[in-house]
Structure formats: C-alpha cells, structure tokens
Length: 435
Ligand code: ACO
Image 1 (cartoon, rainbow, N blue to C red):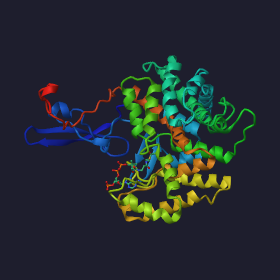
Image 2 (image 1 turned 90 degrees about the vertical axis):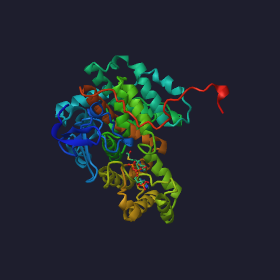
Image 3 (image 1 turned 45 degrees about the vertical axis):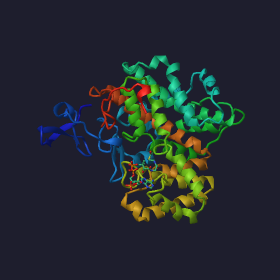
Image 4 (image 1 turned 60 degrees about the vertical axis):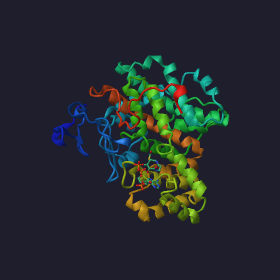
C-alpha cells in the first residue's frame, strides 16, 4: 500500500490562523482525495462528515465503484464479465490475492477451501442453545463470533500464516454455518459438507438435502446461486466492510471482526434490504396498489421507503441489479414460475419508479437487493435466510479487506472524533439541591 501519488494541494484559509496546504492524493481511477491527516495538528480543526459521505477511510486496491456511471470493478475486472465468465471460487481468489488464478492455483485454492468446510463437532451443541424460531442472522452473529473459541490456532493477527488459515476457514465454513442455521429452524438433521460438490452446490445440498435421500440440483439453479454469490462478494467500503475494518483496527481476531460485519449487514438499510423488499412486495400485494406506495415514498411525513431502491454510491442503475434481473428470469423460467405475481409487481414498481420525477431527480435506481429476494424466494429460501446468503457471499470481501488493512502500515486504530454540542463543564449538584 502507500501507492497513492500526490497530485497537488488544497489551501485551507482561516481568517485568524492564516492558511494551510493539504496534499491532494490521486489513485488509479476515481476522485482525488484531500489528505486531512495533518489538519488537526496544524489548524486545530476536525472535519465533520456524519455518515462518511465525503470521506475515504483507507487506501484500497480491491474494488472500485463509479456510482455515477454504474461501474463496479473487482481488481480491475467488471462485475458483468465476472458474473458471466467466472465462478465464485475464482472471484474469491481474485479478491484475496489480486489476480485471477492459473489452472493450478485455482485447483489448489478450491482444494484448500474444500478441506476446511466442516465445523468443529462441538459447535452442534452451540446451535442447540438457540430457540428454534431464532432469526438465522442472530445465529450467524453468535456462531461466527464463537469460531474464535474453537479455532485458537488462527487468531494471532500478527502471523500472516494464521491470517490466511482464518481467511480460508471463514470462506469455507460460512456455507456450513448458514445451512446449519436453516436446518435448525426447520428441525431437520444437519447435513455434513460434501467435498465433491461445487461451493454453491454443496451449500444447496446442506440446505435442502436430507440424509435419507440423494440430493439433485439443477445446473441452472447451481449456476444462479454461484452468480448471486459473485454479485455480493465485495462492495468497497460499505457499512459492514467498514465495520469489519474498524473492529479489526483494534487488533480484534478475524472471527470477531466478521461477526461484527454480519451484525451491521443485518440492518434493513444495508443487507437486510433483500428481506425487506419481499415483505414490501407482499404488503403492496397487487399491481393496482403500486401508485399508493409510490405516493407514500414521496411523502416527507411518511417514513416508508421503496426497499431495494437507492444507494449511497450508485446514482445510476446498480450494475449488479441488471445481472440479478437476468438471473431472476432464468431461475423463474427453470422453475416454471415465469408468471410469478410478485415479479410482475416488482417490474411494475420498478417501471413507475424509474419514470417518476421524485425518483429521477434523487437518482434512485434499483439496487442489487431489488431482485435478489424474488430469486431466492423462488428457489425456496424463507425471507429470513436472504441476508444470511448475503453474509455468506460477502465474507470473502470482508476477509480480503481485513487482510489488506492488517498488512497496510499506514492503518491505525479507527477512532473518529466528534462535534460536541452537549453541556460545557458545570459543577456537580447534590441530589437534595436539584429540582
Ligand atoms: N425510497 C424513497 N425515497 C428514498 C429512498 C427510497 N428507497 N432512498 C432514498 N430516498 C430519498 C430520501 O428520503 C432522501 O430524500 P430527501 O433528500 O428529500 O431527504 C434522498 O432520497 C436521499 O436519501 P438518503 O437517505 O439521504 O441517502 P443515503 O445515501 O443516506 O441512503 C440508502 C442510501 C440507505 C440505501 C437509501 O437509499 C435507502 O434507505 N434505500 C432503501 C433500502 C435499501 O434498498 N438498501 C439497500 C442498499 S444496497 C445494499 O446494501 C446491498
């Protein structure tokens, strides 16, 4: 790291203190950034940016987004090309190591991931402590955090070998952990991983297979799941990734950091949106009620938002949403449910929103979650599992970003400051004198 180049400077002028020059740093593509690291020391000022709308928190070489143009690149490769030509294991390798693998590298990578798919048998008892109706994301947060209690030999973050072992373990075990959360909720026996299957195929088998029968999976659904994983693999410094980095910046172990990321992802403004989209479509219920909900979304007094629309970075169509829409049609076609009323409703909602002045003016376009809920529901997942699948796929992104952060010498513990507006110091008043 430290590959950014200084491309100029920006002068900050203050009537009382004179002026200060702040370096302007440039990356490969994308906007330059003002390096404010010396600002406080030289001027006594902080920057103020709630929600980090104009703040680059780190230097990164993993993912690039151009929100205005609707571009998403992983290590320079466009998401459309990866979704069309690649597979999830290859994308994992790319995110982790920076290059697409050779045949040998891929074989060895897949073998290592496969080798780590089982979880410690003692973890079964851990699951049994949960209520059967627990939300699977609650289980994921608990179980992934608990991995650090089971895998002590990969929690030393200063040892690159242990970091890599933890990375493999997380990518490999996440499908097993997610499938176990599902099986526990439906009261079926846990299925052990099958190392002959693909990453997506093995996951589907652990979710839908039962020990009593052979499990068969349609190649279209297997490919669709793989593509869904690719589309969710990484997305730059989003809320959950930033959470993972912030947790990791204190030196916390990787399992604890990923559990923090999962907790953040759960929220409906982030990964929980796919579940929220489906609930919203079910609530709208029929095409003739779309207008009513669009009206509600535009009413500043109403907190309702069209779930699956809008994005902090994309002010254009989310490139992942296009691929997801295509995948949605493929899956529904394969399953013979092309005339799904929820899909019809979603398409009508999308059409109206894309033409509506409010949505056009605010540049609110469908995001990846708009269609993913429909695909996952058609495949048979209950809505509570949608965000779990997102977490499963995003794990590689979190792990890659965490590794990059640990190896970056310029990273310090994340410690934002604040604009304090509470009371200034005042004398303590004994209780009998208050009132
Ligand atoms: N429906 C209606 N209005 C919306 C929507 C929406 N989905 N999204 C944003 N707006 C409006 C806001 O009310 C706001 O209006 P105002 O300027 O009059 O106050 C304006 O558009 C800007 O919205 P912000 O909330 O300021 O934008 P921000 O970048 O903070 O939020 C977010 C982005 C959280 C994704 C937002 O668009 C949203 O809540 N969308 C619905 C939830 C969703 O789909 N989340 C998934 C995101 S993608 C992902 O995590 C994989």
